[in-house]
Image (cartoon, rainbow, N blue to C red):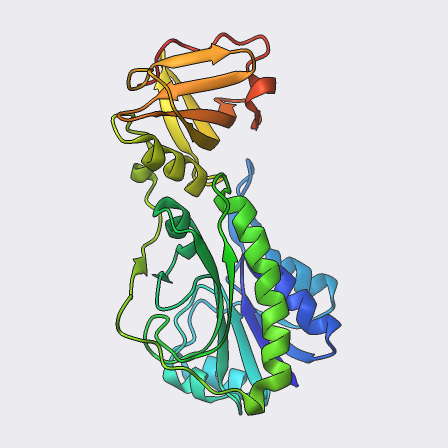
Length: 302
């Protein structure tokens, strides 16, 4: 098929690679414009733009698709379908209607649960036992379109957003290739109204750990916000990010820290967490056994 691909972050790169490897003709790639990054704050292309350029593909990064010129250019590619995954711009109806077979979105949740910006984070933070990927026929609403294909996967108890992100990216790549191969014969399933939830964008204010909460809540927060923005706490004026945790039974008071052998435990309002990975200010993230070598953890986190 002639495909217009629309995506921006790392999550989208494996999908672009899969389309090319499957022999589809990617006639254009759309991605968010380069943004200032790094210490020098120089404009850096998105992961998708960088990969597309390596593949010799034509890249567009308009700041909006509402203008007539941008819409005419998009239609001029004569695409059979547009594949959209974490692109970052709202697609006007004229864009949605331009490809012969419409626009297909790869969404990292089991719709209608977790529509919106941060479905992977929210699934872990909510304690969901499974999530997945949906291939959705796009329409004007926010992730409201009918679903063509879906695939589910278990969320492991200590799985982080980073790890789950990578698994779902691979699942999405495989599923979209299957969807394109079967597209004429697939039946779109209208999303039910029951079970709709919204995955709002992560606010950095959510990242500070409240040790008065239960160990289950704290563990989900730590794993759900890892690696970014990273759940954090303070000890003697030092900010420490906790990047992976599991729940344990303990008599520790809320915020109280215990280092026993290579295990770092912190008490919560009910139960405690075992910290599996952390990052001190100005240091690299590492497993707890490595970080605590030469470092005496504080008696209490706040």
